[in-house]
Length: 284
Length: 266
Image (cartoon, rainbow over all chains, first blue to last red; front, side, top):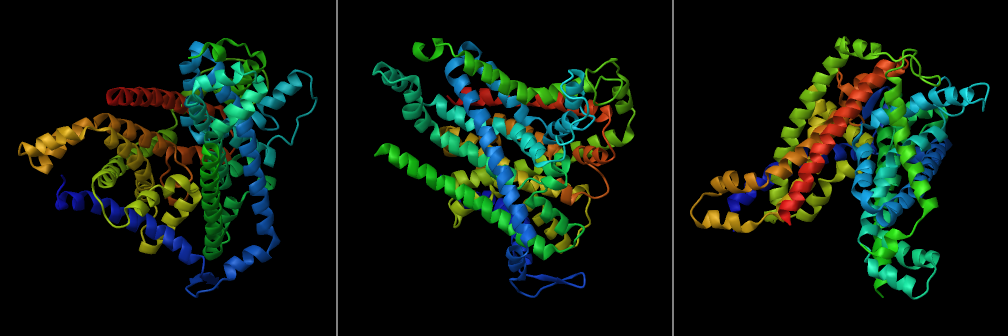
């Protein structure tokens, strides 16, 4: 139906643009990771020294482990908050369902910076939470550990990613045929058994998608640690940022970036495989 | 909806859901409340209602300059991302070319990869070609990264379109060019507006990519970011409250358009 010229006209500009202005930059990042810096200049000498440094200098592995711990905690907490919320909306909210759904969606679009800043004012040592604790005579001096800690980073990111996790789980729960649940109950299964044998397995694809969102998005975050993390909440992307900034070691920074990229793609690939396996098991 | 699942009471679950909603909204409520607090951010409870911080905000030239920069960048990014995203969506929908499946995945990379990786890669490219950092590079970054959003949204819109109208137009002797302007584009109008709004909002808020491509002129999020280093004042609460209001307004428009597109399609 469409002529050759039509197809070429629509396909060429985006292909060229994405190729030159997106793929070439990503390729530049990859190439840089095999170069090195000498006397403050980037030397185009191919080597694996940057990758070797990642594994031999303990500081990188240490930060990487902390990043995985933080991203893992964010994933876990977002699921613990998001799943029951989705379950409640899908099965128990009645006529308020549409309104409550929109109530979850709104914060999703509200500025990341605004929400991060809000936590900063809540958690600070002369912040709102400390003011409240002293006002209610729960504490008598400001509690210092709230802000500038890994705890603050986990809290802020959980707050940001809970609606992200909620969405796919809710979508999955909404597609479960209701007669299936009734059948389970009619045949004498307890509510717990119905949940674990029927609802949870059928919502697993949504749960996996939500978990991946939260994990992958937290993994490469560098703004939350800068905003509320302090030195003890530094994550791997902050290492990249300082290597590209003050330390001026772009090749090493590029190597760390490639590692983050690989971790991201591995997580995505892992969930995709897991999901396929899961649906296969369900069918057989 | 089945009677079994909706009438059963679940007080514990309801309480839990309320608590999660409180967790999601409490920081935003606190933020707004303290923008009206005379004694600054902190302390409890907030006392002495004032509009002083909003007055200061409206007199703050640097902030409004940044707002203007952000609006310019966002508008230009919408134009660029929509144009290329529309072409990409048309290509994915109608043309077959080598590497199509790969292109489809690659164009989504800025959505999947952490902003810092996209931001730094673009920075390397800008340095590579020797361009100075300015609002132009920020626009280049936003526009390019957001092609991903435009392509996904518009491709979904195209898939729902009825092809028969276009076939009829071509059969009746209209050129492909006329058909595109008179049939395809008008039919895609709602998807285009919805995608445009989404890209606009994302660009106005973007910080991870902007961080590395910014020159001397600040966008609004970068201006706020810079001020956070000097300490926090309720003026930032005031601008955050305004940003919140504008986001909510934009989402409601977007949501309605989206609902209308879905209704039209079915």
